[in-house]
Image (cartoon, rainbow, N blue to C red):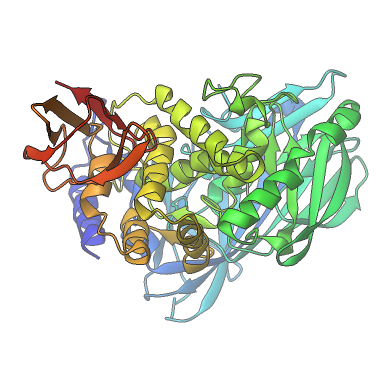
Length: 544
Ligand SMILES: [Zn+2]
């Protein structure tokens, strides 16, 4: 509640200074950022229940048009609703109870004045009609939008991607992570000869005169950026995977000329499912099936329709991000993007500032895939190898309420932070139960960092408050400084926040033992001449 009231006060302050324009300096966020990134009063009073997105895509004109029917439950009896849709897309009309409604605009936020009385508990819906040439992706998926590409045969090959940027880049919605619909229907009309693949299951395919309409139903909560449209000359193959919750349909949609290649290459998908159901618990969307869908960009964690563009290579476009060789044992995009089904799609951050919950755990999932199939040493090699990618430029957590992501260190610093917790718990089965417990405790929910921190501290019986502050909210990696002299080991931590006192294991010859460094120097008897800090702990070691 505290954060929320701060958000609202900030928002009101912004509302009252209308002349304020774009501020570009670091950490100076604009009014648009606040309206986009906070739970505004015009968002807070209603709870999303259902979307029916119904659009036609005209590839030759790079044009889309249609409507989103938004169903919601009234929590507070307010009369103004915020819907987001980014320029240059335009809302043509909004209808509720057969009446066209008045809409005012502040940039990409649209405020709809509702005429029908909104009573607490009512389930209401409205239709937002819209059209335009959506922003073209500049460098999908990072700088996203619509990718209007052609395949090797010159046929249209189209896909959407909008993480961070927001789904409102191509369809009107409540564009904030905290509120997800309970289910969704996605209807897409496109030229004949091409197929659209979206999230969930194909419910119906309707042939029109020159077009075809596919209706895809998602029977689970879904975040906005997870919703996607992929149109191409697709062919399909599938398998039934015997999962921990029963039969799971796994479907693969690839360009017609890649079918044989994909049949061989996508064998990583059931291997992925085996490893992740072991470590994280049941795949969270059995009702919706699991799909891999080929796209003209690298890939994205679109829920139940993970998009794939790693060009049928091992690693990350043929590269090993860990530099150890283990990264070439799997297709990075299949493993990483599917890992997000548990962390991002099942457990979703409420505010994108907490995106490390998506990327930290998912980067960590890469090494758990290796752990399952190649053993613990391989997995440790891999995750420790990825430390070379850490910049320590900014904290992992971004700025709240302004749609701001933290440092890209959320991937590999996040993964190594989790790997370190595994060492502190010193009981792999318990750690596995915590990872599985997160996925059942926060099943289909949106969460804050605090909830994740508290859950791990409680379940592990270790107070990780200072630990999380250090790795999530500070840029410094703790340094273990030590001296060995006169039969004594003198040691302490530097580059730490107050209260950080994580125990670590050190190796002296063949012996391993726990020690308990703090900020102040401590002395203990020591017979050896060398020591080594166990590499599994993410600290720097410095002998003075
Ligand atoms: Zn990711």
